[in-house]
Image (cartoon, rainbow, N blue to C red):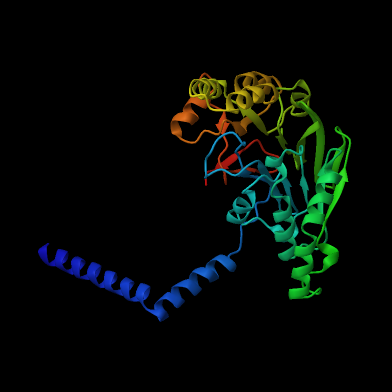
Length: 347
């Protein structure tokens, strides 16, 4: 036994010395780095044969959690890749999830608050550089033209620099800018033989119109609310959906934050926090409505305020059914076709 321990200790020491040599020598560093880079760049990303939903942003502007980007939901199939809203920091999550930017089919915006559109030029630029075959298609309610035109103008010089540097054969200016597609809420916004994206009106006053989306693919469905109160129209659209990602506000947390900010005489914030109550859905109003609509799985995203730790998450779910999920960034929901299964993977 003693001899075995001596041998193991010697092996451990040898491994430690070898690791130190690799870490502290040019040859060793280069070899390890190249191997790691090859694994990342050459890695084949799994293509799920079904409807995959990836949370690329679960936060709202109210709160501070570096582990959460602002609103962004990705929908991926073997033949489709769409983003629904693109809030700040969501490109980092998109990259971490290794989503296929070169084949992005479009971005669908629910409304034009900054936390839903801030990363739009990053998404456009990144997908262009990675080989997007045409202009980035951006769908949204009336007003999307103004947003797209503004970002196109702001990034016009940047696009010109990159084409001049790399050449038009590699980075064609014809593919560089975004193209807006306004629609009327209630329209089928996008459709092919296997997928349909339908818009519906939601309640987010004073923003009119604000919309949500329902995606149907091979017998499976996901509904994305955007920002809204608990609206009857949404639950009609969400009838028998597999997944519902719904904006959710916790009075349990928010009321205490308002009280603390008022007592501390923090300027402006008590009023701002009070104002948001009337245009985000109270979390406690959602489970019964979702059950009545036949929704299989209710997921809270765009949480107000952002629960930054386990205690806040527990408080957010106080007096709510255990089945409800608080979304987290890079969480994945896989819906096999023509099935009832929902396979959830944590980051």
